[in-house]
Image (cartoon, rainbow, N blue to C red; front, side, top):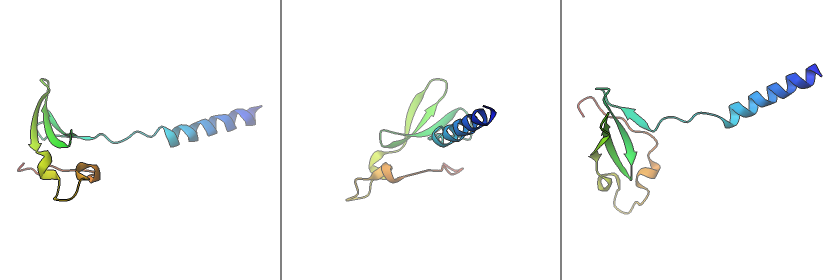
Length: 84
């Protein structure tokens, strides 16, 4: 009985760890701490808090190259430099 209980708890822990992994946030906080950057509708936008005002940083057309329809679907990560 004790072995079955330990086995069940270990199996539950392994399954939870395998399927319940937390994903990375798809937002990047701005250096001011009052806004964040996010990819939204194929554009890189800045969202100011607490008003949730959205401002385009990089337009969708700038992120697509000629003849490439993948655009943002191929971007895994982005970084904003200190000088903007």
